[in-house]
Structures are given as C-alpha cells and as structure tokens.
Image (cartoon, rainbow over all chains, first blue to last red; front, side):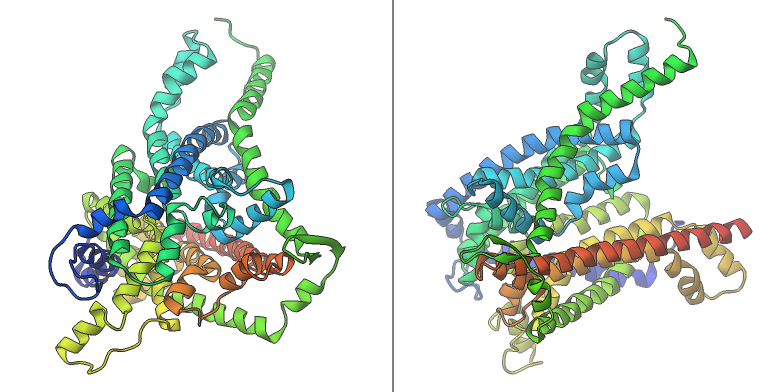
Length: 258
Length: 302
C-alpha cells in the first residue's frame, strides 16, 4: 500500500497498544509493590521476587516445566524441520501442508481431551512424559510454519549446484540445506520453547497429579486470589517470553510466516 | 556427467520425491496422525458409546449423548456461549480492523515493529494475561480507584465476575489473532483498485466500503474464526473473570472430562466445537474463492 498520512488512524493504533500493554504494565509495576495488599502502592520492594525462590511449589513447577519445554523443543524442532522440508520440497500439496499445520489451529481443549482419552485407551500413565508428547504435536506445527516460510525465501539452486558438483545427498543436506534454513529452525525452536513454557490447557489434561508444570501451579494459585507473589512470577515469565520472541524475530522475520 | 534421458530422468525424480517424502515428511505426518488425528477420531467414536461409572467408556452403542445435548439446560449454555463468543468476535474486529489498517499505512520500517508489538502479548502466558484483568477490574483495582479519584463514581463498580469481564478477557486474549490476518489481507490489497475508485469519483468512504472492505473480507473471516472458535472452547477466562457464573461450552467440556466423568457426553460437546470450526473454514474458503474470482475480473477490466 502507498503510504498516506495516517491522520485519524493514529487513534485506533494508540488505543490498541494501550489496551494490549497497560494490563501488562500494571502487573509488572505491582510486582514491585512493598504492600501485601496487591491494590495499594506503599513503596518499592523486590521482596516478592525473593519469596518466589523460597516457594517449593513454584520451584518444583519450574523444574517440571523446564523438563517438558526442553524435551518438547528438541523433538518438535527435529520433526518440524524435516516435515517442513518434506512438505515444501517433495509434496507441494496444499492438503498435506494444511494437515501438517493443523495441530497449531485445532482448539487446545479439543486436542487436550482427545489426548486424555487416547492416553487412557493405550494405557499411558499421565506424567511429564505425556505432556511432552502432547506439546511436540503442536510445537512441531509451529516449527514447520516458520521453516516453510524460510524455505520460500531461500534459493534452491545452491543445493542443485552442490549435487551437480558431486556431493552426496547427505552432504548437501548437512552442508547446504540445514545452514540455509538455520535462522528459521532456531526461531521455530525458540517459539516452541516459549509455547511449551506457557502452555496450560493441554498440560492440565495430560499431566499427572504429582508433577504439575508451572502454568498448572499458577492456575491453582490464581484461583485462590491475587497475591504479590503471582505478580512477581508473572513479571518474570513475561520477561522470558518477550526476550525469546524478540530474539526469534531478530533471527528471522517471523511476521513473514503470517 | 551424463545427460539423463527424459524417461530415466522422470523415474529418478519420482524416486527422489518418494525418498524425500519418506525421510523428511513421514515421521512428522505419522506423529501428527498418532497424537492428533487418532485422538480426535477417538473422541468421535466415544460420542456413540455409554459412559463408564468412573470415567472411561462402556462399549455399548447409543445415541443418547446426542439427544442429551438438546436438553434445555445445555441449549441455554450453547446460546449463551454463542452470544458471548459472537460479541467478543465483533468487538475484536471493530478494534482489530482499524488497527490493522493503520499498521498497513505505516512506513515500512515501522510496520515490522508494530506487528511484533501486536503478537508479543500472544506469545506470553495466557493465564498471566487473564490474571492481569483480575487486578484491573477488581473493586479495589486501578480502574475503580481512578474513576473514584476523578469523582465519576462514588462507589466501586463490580466489573469482575460479569459476562462483560469475560468478554473483555476474551477480546484481550485473542485480539492479536484478528489483527494479523486482517493486516495480511489489507497489505495484499491492490492499491490501484482504490485509486481507480477515487478517480472515478467515489468518496474515500465509498471506496472503503465498496472496494477495500469486500476485498479484505477473507482476512476478516479468518480473524473472526480465530477469535470465535477458541472463545467458545475457553474455560479459564469464564472461570477466572466470570467467577463461574458464566458457563461456556468449554467449561461444560472440561467438567464432563475432569469432574462429571462423562466422557461420551463431553465428546459430543467437543464435536460441536470441531464441527463449527470445519464449517466456518469451509465457508471462509468458499467466500474467499468468490471474492478472489471477482477481484480478478475487476482488475482485468481496470
């Protein structure tokens, strides 16, 4: 589109960003509130952050979440990258591409109950492992989406040249294909990691009762009300997600995958 | 290097495609089939059988679960959910469309920043984003206390635990999912069509409603589906911001699986959500095909 003066369009623009970021800003500011009452500001303090580290439930939840997120990221990145190459290079079929992206679009609750029923049927005990298996399925779809977008931006003539010059398929894959897709793969991996870190609904249905992930711990805390400790935890998690997503964006233009 | 004959070349290409599909695509496609497709088909199968006493399933065929979905209690939940998800969708579009339009008019280097700022909240923990609204809407929270400070109200308004709070929470959660597809469709728009409309004497408003809006309808519909369907299936926001007073289809499904232990009935409810998703996508595809068809004809003439 040709650029016009945006004029009155400034109004919705500013209003939307205010709507999106004011709640987050309030949360972060309140996490530094000295008062135990989460609504009245009495002074600056970082005590709720140190309280977090003493909270055994939160610490265990964090460890559980990291186990799932790291495992799911590794598996989803490998499977998703291969799938993207397979779909973009060897299938070129809209149906297969839609199928490989479907796990990212299907409502999380539907996937969650389906997996609960499935794990019960085949006799898989619910644990961190079942959460990991579940996170891989939609994580893989997000990796595929980003890598497919990256494949669209790269030139396949380098690979052809490599083959013509006598390199084997394996050599070409590891020396040419993978490096050219690396930004997309890394960005995809970062996205899966943050998705898994923050994912609640699927984990809630597929996790065992003795190993809650961090979002499940947060859910049970939030149900009992507002505490400054949750504010501090929330602020930290926001920082982590923001950092990861901005790095992913800097590595590859995520907005192109839209 | 020998130049392959056409036949052997085609054969080799076909063999390469087969190897490529098996090595690259098969593991992922099999994984998706095992951990998404089969579980969803299982939900479909379960919907035709009887509930087990402690959850699970008794393998006796029945249509009872479907009949039960038409009981007035559940019809009430459906209509309630459709109204709330519908209001959420309309509001998200009313906010999202002008925002997407404004972003598309920004200078290129600002556009990426603007888009990243839109998606950033979407990648954060959605429990936390919902929790932020518990603080904001609370009777002691910042909105009520500022309104009281200014003197607009004398006593706090009970925003929290109302359907309105649920709608605000849902709009907040899914707004990025509206802005992105709408932006994509505006960005792809052929500027010449709007200029042509202007040259032919249409006012800017007329050009917008007759040209821009219809041509961006496919993006608008994708955005609408991305808000509407997850809103129906969301059980956390109705619980945390609606205080359990607003019951949506998502809450029913959750309860059937985790509390009432009536999996077959929960399966029927989940199928309602999946069917809606499929039907809406099909509708979107059909409308988008028609519009693209007309779009080509129009630009052909211009």
